[in-house]
Image 1: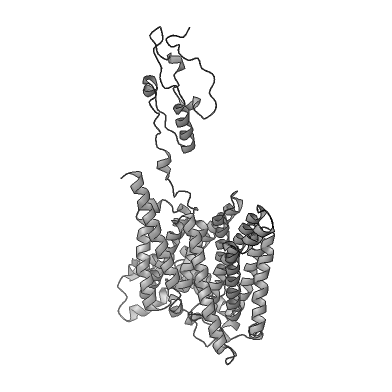
Image 2 (image 1 turned 180 degrees about the vertical axis):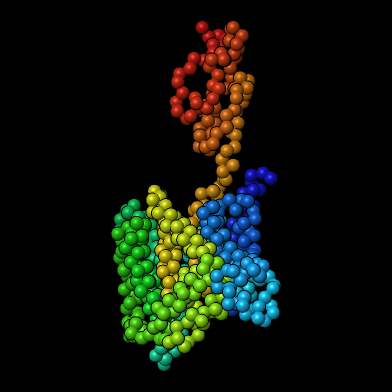
Length: 541
């Protein structure tokens, strides 16, 4: 297959990967955040196609960094290990299985091989639910720089649509129900707030990018009229649209009345607006972001901000006892360590560890990391630590990169989004909601992606042999070195193009004396060669 066909094939695969990501990002939140059987099944089927596109073709698989593959592999291994069948003697010796083994022996069913998980069906279900986040993570890693930027815009658009719906809900029922909270298509307003947290830094950074680009272009204008035209040009329109999106997202976050979401969102604004965005948009980015925040606060006051503030003084049974729930979950994790109870088994096995003063049904630990530790044991701990290490290493690398283009800026914004939702996961279970889990995985892929530097040529294409033009018999016979740098090869080609077009035999019958024939790339490095005597031609004396 020639190179043109290979590039066409890679382009088609990249378009397919992008379309799958867009479809999943738009569809997942539509029906209860994807947290129902039918939408989850559809997402899982689409995820299988996405995993095939990302992992089977070598041209796509080559874009996935090894460290990212290791982290994803550790996460995928948790449900697979839980479904591993074990003999009765070994199964009963694993921590947390002794009491179950005794009960099974009394019932006469203690001699069968059993899966490591204490609830294999739940582990199988949870393992399948892990397919969409894994697929979106790998697919995002394969995108070109342009499509990475487009993906972040789609995520913001999805959040804006959800924000509009949530605000309409609040406007329709908020006046009649004192405890009403905006939730969009989500069941839980806290998970609705999680989506807003992921979109907010992307919108803020996009605003900073457009502000910086518009102002830089205005520096080179001549006269007030040209400056006014540029002010109302398409870039200025984009600035207004980003301001509008930021206001809607902030309002939706406020009227979700999620205390953790509002607090973490304030921290996200500080990180993005004060640290990251000015590096892109310049000092004027402070003013643009400040306008957006001021507009959002003004609209919130006009709608009625008192119920949001009252929310910070009210605690329900679960929230008041969250510390006790954490303590019981940690006790549970110790009982099943190091292999865990099996993915998806928390709700089934938590009742013996539930505090006696909490009578409500506790089906989640309300801390994603503790719940993963309970169900996955040491393997889950390794996955969490490896993911955190990869995130820190990548953020440090992005901060040190000399180029500051739009893709670089949006990767930093995605890193802030990942940080915010990861912090929210310490007091909620966003990663158990399919829509939030797969959008989180998309953003993690945006952060780790190699920014499309291999989209034009792969490593083996850079090592192609550049043949020298046969300008003379001697030149055609000269050895042809292999060049590992395309720019160097181009300089060599130019050097040979400017060589004499013909060489006639010298009086002694030689042609070009052997001493003057270049035999290595050392004399063809693009610098001006030393003066070399030419062979004498007929008629010259």
